[in-house]
Amino acid sequence: MQEASRLILGLRAAGWNEKDINDFILYIETGEEQYKPQLIKENQKA
Image 1 (cartoon, one colour):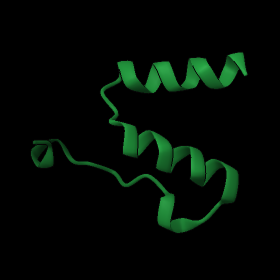
Image 2 (cartoon, helix red, strand yellow):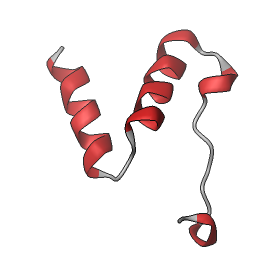
Image 3 (cartoon, rainbow, N blue to C red):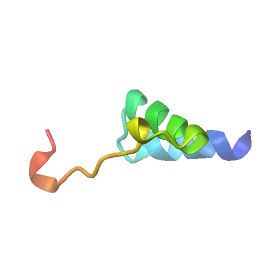
Image 4 (cartoon, one colour):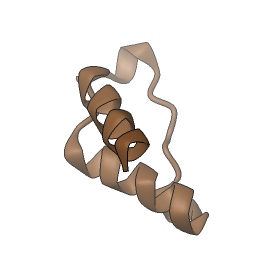
């Protein structure tokens, strides 16, 4: 569990929102493409 906590805290520190973090964890656990992170280009950041 310590590793999972560090992963979540690291993603928060990197600016990820809670939905993106949850989807990423679901992708890791299930492998389902619908949860796979999408590349965000610099000019698309809001």
